Length: 367
Image (tube, rainbow, N blue to C red; front, side, top):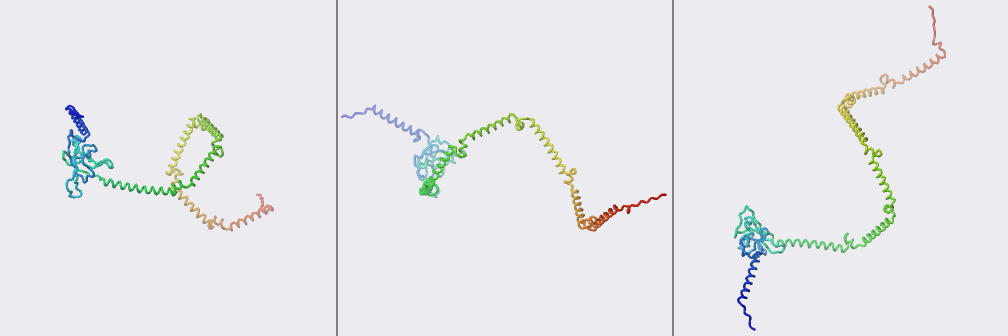
């Protein structure tokens, strides 16, 4: 069977299709940023202590925004000290996106996307006080915790989780053995029996209440209490209506302005009385008047004290029998003499009554 020949027109169509596809691929890659055929780019470098998985093609970000890719990662010589940064990273970035935002105080940080994601270079924008860095400039770097430190922290967390898991397992074993309060709640039938008994007693109590037995049952089922409460409420309502209408003493106190005026006048008089009492107390405090002098003047106190001392001296002399009054109180002679005199007077009166002529004589004489 003879082979079909390809015509020139078909070849042209095929080449045109391939060119169209190539142009479309290049356009898509240019738009997505994978190649920069139609963009102006700048190259800058930075030095790191360790690459930690960084490779060509990883993203370069400025303040978190994608601006380019890593163009090369290589060594920059043998370090003189342990602190030297010997990993040289070359970055190709979009000049329009970068502008003059990368300055002398900018920092390039080796970061990563997620916990186990790809590595990225994140550049911190600079400030206007420092000059802008141009094409071929080197950006200072700032070290970030490496994967080893991250995994070490994760290992510590896992160790703690393992310890907590062991403790939880021990607690669950104790519960399964019936130890502790929770274990007894799960395995001891006594608690179930007690709860069941409590539920049965509660049901019996509720049944008695529903049947009207006992105080609670009567309170719930007996309408007499409701009627009494209803009557009491009606009476209270009647009393409140009487008070609102001004009936009775309390109603007049609430509604009659005359009672209020009288009480107000009484209070005014009481206030005046209190003011007068305050004035009197002030005069007493100042020592004015007789009572004030009695309260404040020490002369009367001294005189009374002297009089008391004098009375005490007189009383002491009377007790000792000194003076006329003392002898009258202490000496029995005067009492005996008076007693004898009284007896003689009685005898004389008796004799006078028997023979008055003896004591009376009338003599008449004429001139």
